[in-house]
Image (cartoon, rainbow over all chains, first blue to last red; front, side, top):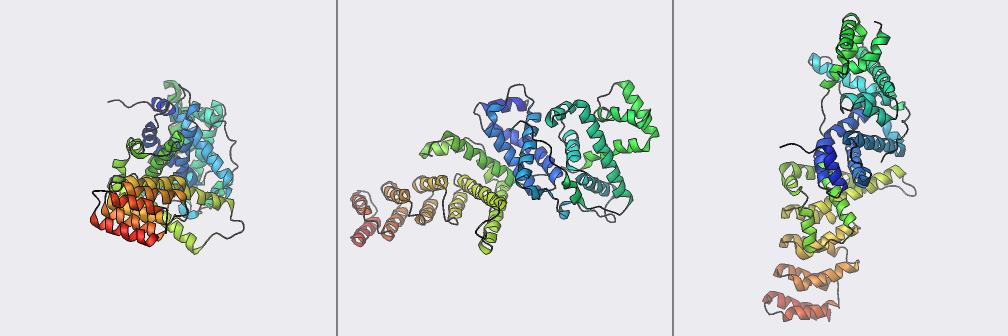
Length: 199
Length: 271
């Protein structure tokens, strides 16, 4: 049995077969939830935003065009949902320190400790850098799709990914080498990127 | 080759998008450059970050949202078998009656309970609650209604009962929930659920359709227990218009004698 491509399912949703959205929800709720939770550090908000994405898909399903890669389309919606949310509730952008993964240098195995520190380093990155790393590393978007999503040139995407990775490396290096942990709230001080023209 | 030149190739290297020559060039650089090789190592380590799972309530909320959206879109009041048929076509009931679904309900109810409790203790202060809080409250109220609507469609009577009881916490019922409750009163296969629905509806007697539905239910119900409860309710409301319906009921040939006796008593009370 072969799985129906996302695009076919979305076309069925567009044409009125709403139950097919359940299949897409099963495929995308965990990746989307992880996109949001790694971006915001807030589980509750992440779940709310996932719901918002699927509500928007229903609302704007008529705007889905055949041939549009569904993954890129849904992340466009996901991105806009988050931007709209933080426009409405700017104060929620600040991280709570207890949302960061715990760091236990003495009682964890080395790899586990490294993963925790890396997670922490990721959360400390400025939001735009964290987002671009999440999009290409965890959401499996191609650079071309990210360029379309962010509204920039392909080469700009490459440069931004490299800069983000450089900064992540430095932050991770600092965390693994020295005890000086800087407050993570600084990560939330970036301005929001401009909203793109999709639902 | 310098780091700046490698930097141009590195993103494609990480995604395996370089040709073999370029790939070898980067590999050679990485062997000599600690910073660049550490960058690649950090990139690879990112895959070790745990994949977090959303809570099971997330799926429940999605199903409720989907059904509510579809029901709203069809823009027709829910009616008898069509209502149930519409909902049974969504493949969620099995999931919701599973242990995971039960856990999800519990979690949702707990969260809503905590919120409700919080607000009982700390009611929002007039005159101007923050717009953020108002928005969250509105969304929560909406979610509660969706949860109730979903629960009233469950196959398990105890779940439907829970859904009915849940509505009694609300001072105001949203029209969709009210409509679903009225439907439950008339058509639910379980006597217990119908009785609970009547009890829940009795709190909303100010709504004209509640009274008329209770009166109409009198003619439709076959269970003596429900009939007696309906009669009691009409007496409690001192609904004089119900008298003619009670007269009609007591004329029914196969009426349970206890119910007939109770109808007689009610007619005398309403005189």
